Image 1 (cartoon, one colour):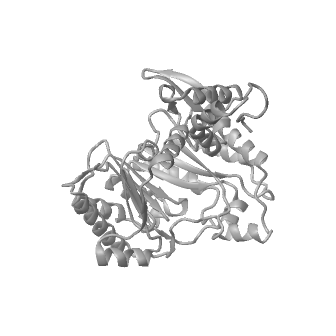
Image 2 (cartoon, rainbow, N blue to C red; image 1 turned 45 degrees about the vertical axis):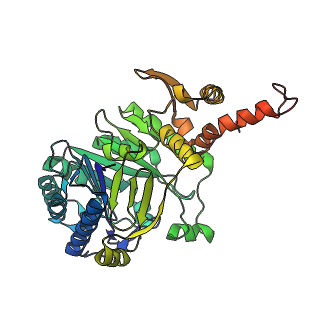
Length: 402
């Protein structure tokens, strides 16, 4: 399967944020040419290994790290390197690049627009000054405002704003105010990220030492549902568990991930999926560069999901988007489960031209992992129920929702 979506990882950051567990190299003056050379070499290797004459890209996503730290000329340089192996000049190409507000001004926005970038993903995270300092962010509360203005002035068609919720309990950041300020900027897209304390991060260590305490489940859920209410009321479609978009501005690149389409990933820590196999690269920049120079690729590990693992993954992917799952494929046990979810406000059935489907509500998306497991397990649980002796309806021993 030839991928039409390409992810390129730029690992460089001027500073590592307190919560960051991404494949990041701290370097305020990144080696842009070395990065471009290595990305092109890895792409050339995979194109040859895949037996593809050229890739025809529909989406391109440059993530990080901090792609905006690469400075003027980097996106044009990347475009020129990709052209040797891929068609990436079509007017329909969705090209997203991530930016931090402190590094994204009028000059860089114009540079990106000329290179062909059509969508800027802006790491705002919050508008609260004290919280920005705690996170290790380098921009102030007005940084996102200036960055959005620069995007508009350059003529880049779309901007997405990232926000983080679920901060440790001691923080007094006004989440409702963050949502209001985001809506005032009128971005085409908003992404939410629930904060997690990964063990290898400063935040993870602070939590382990008792210096920080992550919020109670009720507080986390309340912030998520407040965002759902505020953003949908402002006209954004809640099209995936963490993503909201104005009509016509849902991320096409991310939808490739959620629908099981093939995609190719380049750079440290990047993931690739060429059904049925997926693999991911080593995370360290120096190790990645050395491996590509030596053999054309930097794969750390790979897997081929099959059987039960693949079935569960497909259920999870389907339930995380507004498209949901087709009821025509559901077993009687899953149909009963869908009714139980709907009764509790976790899901809703709806009808499209292709028939009836089920999708999760905002409240259901808070339980996504659990509900996907329940959906996957329902047929086997029902089979065990049917084969058990002396089973009576309502005797309290059958499977039930927690």
